Length: 347
Image (cartoon, rainbow, N blue to C red; front, side, top):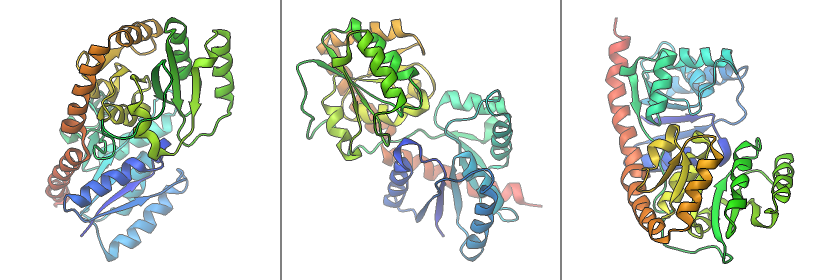
């Protein structure tokens, strides 16, 4: 019987991370079915759950990996009255003050799940605070395709300037605005902001471009909307990758590390687990433009340290975050979950 990977979390990468994990699980010998559900809402999740229940009566899966709270809600409805284990991964948890209803549902979904997968230590603590028993939480990090993202291969053309690369979904101007604010103190550098799935111009692009012009660095800022297949070549052309938004940037950070690019990142969440401070890059306090600028200036002026960090980053990406490693960890959790579910369901 298959493992079903049910996802309602496309994010910026259009389910790319889920597809990569499904492929890695298949290559490890698992029969895995990827079921991606776009545009699922709280109102439509129950209908999805009933449809899944109908399908799974004919061919019940060995386990369900649900990615996203709406996937988790649908999965719990679908497995009601069965012993099918559900392994839940949330991604970004809602804040009580921002969306109390969703936060309460996430807690209920987590408590109902056989096991809950956390991407990092910070997420474990967040889940425990929510009331999820620590004994039912397992850490399985995000993964990166280290056959595609490598330190060897084609490289984008570049100017003589030092190149900083970041990603941003243009949902607001906070993160990219912080990066732009460091450019005046980095006179020989340019910033390329990759905007996956979002085509400039946008209000955020206009706002940030105006900010750059006011600081007289407009000629050193570029927004890039490109084919995702070009991302490895772009990363290999970078001197540094910069990330400030935790869960939203983790895939980008792992891709940069796999391409041998040192990372300057906010010391928070999954980023703090991925980047080895002083070994593969530098961690700085979140929302601290001064410390961010200081770290960028220091690394851009020290090519030997950048090279050392880049070599260590490649090794760390392969050994700890390669898709094969993550698929292996996922398989172990699935194996653990089946008897656990039976024990929980026994009369």
